[in-house]
Length: 140
Image (cartoon, rainbow, N blue to C red; front, side, top):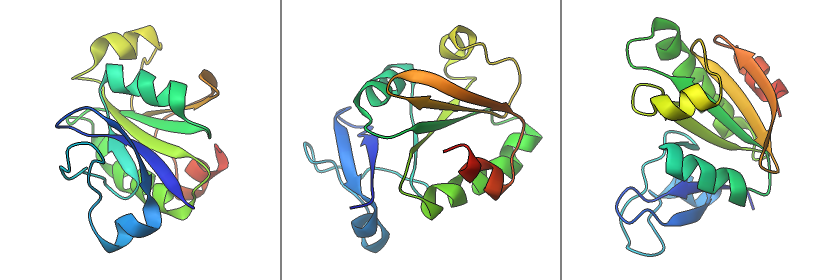
């Protein structure tokens, strides 16, 4: 089963989402029943929820650090989203650096977009700048 992890924006429950079912109908939280917004198979998270998913994931987690004012980030976002639909071998997350400056600083994000890969709770790869689709998939 191809799945991802996501956080409910209403009750903050951690949800495992079947991606095949999510293609047919919008996923809902198993606890409160609210819709879980996904862009492809990408979940936008805050610092608290980022760490929850990193600790719980049983496969690599790929994170796109971005900001709304960043031109390259706007170009990279749809590529990152497309990559999330091409593989079930990773969990895809987005972190808005404007909304989460402490996390960005703690992880040493100095430029955006930046793509980090965590596996078993530890950072294993990092790539600065926008990547082509194949580049994102090669990080797994």
